[in-house]
Length: 278
Image (cartoon, rainbow, N blue to C red):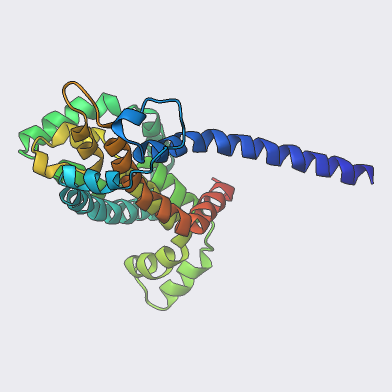
């Protein structure tokens, strides 16, 4: 009876902490939604809930800037980057998980070490390289790198999962005459669906919310992405906060929907990969 009481008290405290944490996380989101429905004069008032709900802010936010053009540009970058990141990281992970070669452990440690290298260190050299290639003010600098490795963390995540797949499947496929490529595409990729979806979600969130990359490489307004297009609501002397927040809510919705429907695979991919022995 005493153990049951302690267990109930522990669960109650856990739930209370989770509720407090969720409230802290939700306050900025609720403030954004609330501001998106206010008039310009009401934005800086103390009331959290708008006195009059201005739903027309969303329509004005879409028409004030070329919103759908920015959406098209974002998708032009997003789709190939997701394909390149997922496929190239899975291919590298397959090599580390299944092949044996000299220096494999050293190369893998070097790969992991790159995660500790700040992006700011490589920012200027990469810009100079892409400028010399004539790729500045194009989508290429934002797309092409995704086809060369897919990122150290993504490789590590998928590699950990693939190490847990029995090698008997590879041997059986070899006996049936399958090549390494067939094993990778027909066995390893289908079985590695959870971490692949997790990587796809990470990539989607990163590209969808990326502000720094387009800011560095895109100069023409008609090539802006959604994240970069938000800056157009900021004038020289003032900021249209209500329409800026309305556009922000519209941009957040796809990310929330994607995570809501794929959270099962996301959690499964992270948890299973973390449970594998390195």
